[in-house]
Every structure is written in C-alpha cells, then in structure tokens.
Image (cartoon, rainbow, N blue to C red; front, side, top):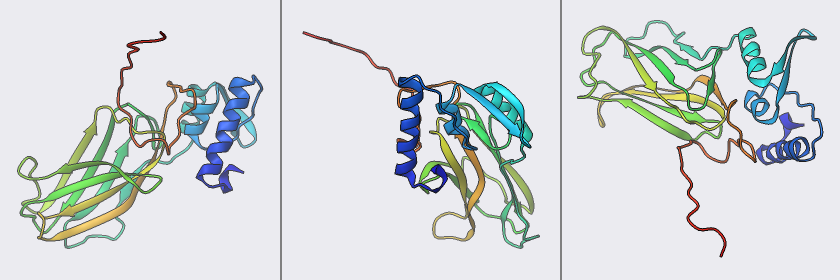
Length: 229
C-alpha cells in the first residue's frame, strides 16, 4: 500500500501505525526497505535473507547488519571514456554507515576527481545536495582565489567535508557544476549523482521524522519563561 500511495497517503499511514503502536500499545508488523521509516517506527527489527532470519534485535544493530549484506555504494564514474574538455571522472559520497546510508548529524565527505587535459584558467566547481522532492537543500563550492586548481593538464582531487551534516531523513543525490567564472565557459553540469539515504536511529520525536517537514535541522534551545497565572 505504501509503495503505490502518494506522499500525503504515506504520511497518514505511517502516522496511524505510530499511533497504534506507541499510544494504543498494540504490536504492528512493519515490512520495508525504507531504513528511515524502520528506524523511526520500530524498536525491534528482523532481517530476512532468503526466507531465513539473519538478524533479530535492536533496530540499530539490525540496520547495521542489513547494510553489511548489501552493496550500494554512492559512487559515480564517467563511462564515456576520455573527454577533451574538463569533466568529472569520479565522485564518491562517503557516508557514516555502509552502502550509502548516513546518520543525520554525523560527518559526511564527498570526493571529486576532475580530469582536465585542457587546462582551466579559473576553475569554478560547485555542487548541490538535492532531496527527494527535487529541491536543492545544500550548496558547497570551490571558487578562486580561495581554491585554485586545474591550471595544468592532469587530474585534481577535491575533498569536501561536512563536520555535522544535519539533513532530515530521506533520499538525496548530487548535482554538480564545473565552469569558468560567470560569462565564460561551462564545461559540465551533471544531475542524479551518488544517491544516498539519511536516517536517524538514536533520536526520537513524538510525531516521528517526516521528510516533508523540513530539509535541514539546527540545534535549538527552548526556555519556559512563564507558565500559568
């Protein structure tokens, strides 16, 4: 049912399951490959492999076991062969967990290998993180004069590190831009690169984590300054 429903329908279904399990004290069997929903809704998880139980226990342990059994690294490699103009040869998103799964709030790294047989005068590289609703939610850039590279023939590897990437749960990918400064040459624009998933295992919230509620989290402090009469 969830697989064929739209976003609002899925939200209502997940909310009802949460109410039944947490507020009414009833047991709900939830079967899904959606790790964010599994981490949010359940307190115990069972991993099946070929019809047999391969893990049964706390959700965090079960998810770690599941990820160790699958292969879905967030990597892009250019398959068009050698190109004369500057281009991305390889991109890799290094998530906190195995196989393209990232825990919100943990460090995330992205490696870019740029091939430039034709030297670039003032290389400008940027990328966006795009969420499942096709909205750009993060932008990072390596622009001159702060970051300079590619002025001779060869390859350059750039590493972008987010110390605490506080994305909301959901599915994401990269969109890249390799150009000269505005008004000059545009070398390459790519979209749909390196899909990865963000989950929250350790944190809980009364209404759960909804991908459509926000794109990003920030630390907050609440102070009750007055209460009652």
